[in-house]
Each structure stands twice: as structure tokens, then as C-alpha cells.
Figure 1: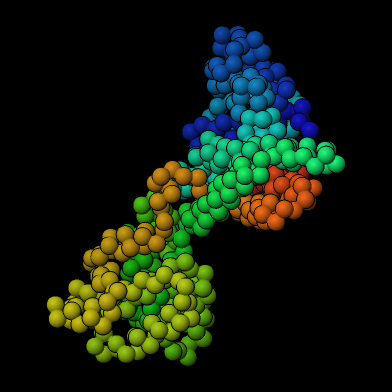
Figure 2: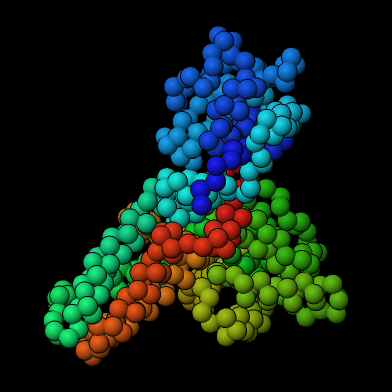
Length: 462
């Protein structure tokens, strides 16, 4: 049911700033705005054209609250599809609250989280996957996540799903028609074409499902654990990555007793670096807790950087190899980058010996920032950005991923039924379920609980 009341909310971040934008949407939005606005040219907002700007004052009776600019957007040509006005006022928190309280007294109510975008969905301005992309766009903090959100908001993903759904729906109609003529034993749906369609749908669904592995890391960032013995330069490496003194560095072993995390964007991809406590045998209770946390962070990380002091390799090489094997055996599926730090202290012969002992080693000097850029390139190589570069559809939403998996399962059931000459009525059930899952993605099938869960994660004012 499409709501008829008018809602109001602050559309810019809360707090003081140069300006703030207060948004009103609803059937009476322009009338309510007009009741508190006095144009410097004595214009009535209700008689003005859509997509126009007007300078004037917000008045609470005879009291002037602020000089503002009012933007008018008449439905259906607005973000929400309803009459909408946006009041650009000065960014004082006092002014913001005074204007919002005045509008509430004039008949508005406070908007719920994501209610403007919910109304856009209900009024057919966006489908559900595009609406969800709005939240992703707002929260995007690197080039890759921004690019994916923009592509989805423009309808790239939903268009792909809509085409598959439409073709499947056409065949479903023919299958249903066969059921009406079951006694005549006729076939309206060409089985060969139907099989080709199912193969094509299966191929697209698998590609979209596979893209989630890339989409998920792009959206949420790639956790990278920096591990190794105490005092090998883990905190120095984190500081070199971030170009700031984020972690405490000292000559005393065991300085880092808890994990320190920070993010860095490399090549448009977000990486979340975790500086961990040094791994060693210790009787210190606090340090022991930190070491236990280190292994927990390795478990959570998608990439592990194992750092050691290359200048000490002659003395502690055997112990180092044992520690390295322990991590490899405990986490065999995790990409492991082996880094020899303090390489600026090595002779040429020592470098050769190290590379022959550990061929995959990357030598750096975190303190002098030598080899850090090469390490960044190596980390970026773990992310398959081919689909991103080719502007292919990439799935980042867990809800979409779940529906795609279920749709694929139903399509494979239909394929099996077609290959084993299953009766049309049983195949029709599986087709309906696949269509249902497609509809769940784009919002052609919704319920209040689903919409509540999705829009509860939005910010107020959007």
C-alpha cells in the first residue's frame, strides 16, 4: 500500500556545517512547504514549475528562522515519485531542528530509515535491487565498490535478471497451457528451445554466483593479517602502508599485544590490514592473549603476510621454517605472502642464499619503504578484477546471492525433469519457484518483513 502522508528528515549528515538539506516528500509536501516559506519575490510554491529553485525565508508565524533555497520536484518526476521539496538552510543544528519541528507541527511526520527510497520503490521509480544499490553507493569507500553500486543502481543487474525471468515466464505460460489440454496430449512448448533456454539461464546464474566471491571482497574489503615473530617489523610495515605512525614501534620485543587494524585502498580495492602480536613462546599472560588473538585473526583473514627479519635468517632460519610450515599446514587454503624485512642490511650473497632457500620470498625494507609498492601489487593480484574492468555484472548482496543459488537449484531440477520426460505439471512447480526467486531479487515478489529488513539498514533521510 502506497502511503499518502508527508514525511520529513534531514538529508545531509547530522551536525553543524555550511549548509543542511531538509527533505519533505508526500502528497501535501509542496503545500506544507508553502505554508512556512516566504519568497523574496512573493511567489507561491504551489504554483511554481517542477525542478525550480526559490530563494526566501522560513517563517514560524512572524518569526524568521532562516534564509533558504527551496527546490521543487513534482511527482511523478521526483526521486520518490511523489511531490518533494528540499530546503537548503544554513548548517546550524539549532536551525535544522527549528525547521524540522515547525514542519512536524504543520502536518509532516519524521521519516523512517530508508523511507524516501522505499517510496521510490513502491512508486515504481526503482526496483528492489536498484534501491539496495542506493545504500551500497552511500557506503562505498573505494573506486571498485562505487563502480559496482553505480552499475547496479543504473539497472545492470536487474535488467539481466528481468530478461531471464521474461523468457522463462513465456515458456512457463506454454507449459501451463499444455496442462489445460492434458487430455489431448499436445505440446505447445518446443522442448529443444526450452532446453537451450535452461542452459543459457544456468550459465548466466553460475556466472553471477561466481562473481559474488569478487563482489563480496570489493564491498567489504580484503582482510590481510600481518604475522611473524616479535620485533621483525610488522608494525613498521603497517605504518609504511599507511604513511603514518599508526602502530607503536620499538626495539622491545612484544610491544604489540593486541591487534591493530586500518584500511588502505590499493588500485581501487579496499584492504584491511591487521597488525598482530608477535608469535613466540612467552610466560606473559597479556602477551599470550595477544598471540591467541593473532591466530584468530589469521582464521578471519583472506590473505596472510608472514614477515621475518631477513638479516637474522642465518641464525634463526630453521626455527623460521618450522613456524612457516605450521601456518601453511594450519591454513592451507589461504594465500600466503612470505616477506623478508630489513633487506637493506643484507649483502648480495645473502640475498642469493635467501632466494634459493625460499624461492617465493619478497625482500623489502619497511623502515626505508623499499619494496612496499611491489608488495601492494602482489596483494592486488589476489583479487580477480577482470570482471570489474570489463564492466560485467558483479553480485555484492548476500540476499541476491541466496536467491540466485535457489533459482539455480530450481532451474537444474527443471533441466533434469526435461531430460527424464517428467510430467508438465511437476516441471511447472519448479519453474514457478525459479520465477519466484527471480522476483525476490527485483522486488516483483515482496512482503512487509523483507522490505522492513532491507530498508532498516538505510540512513534516515534517504
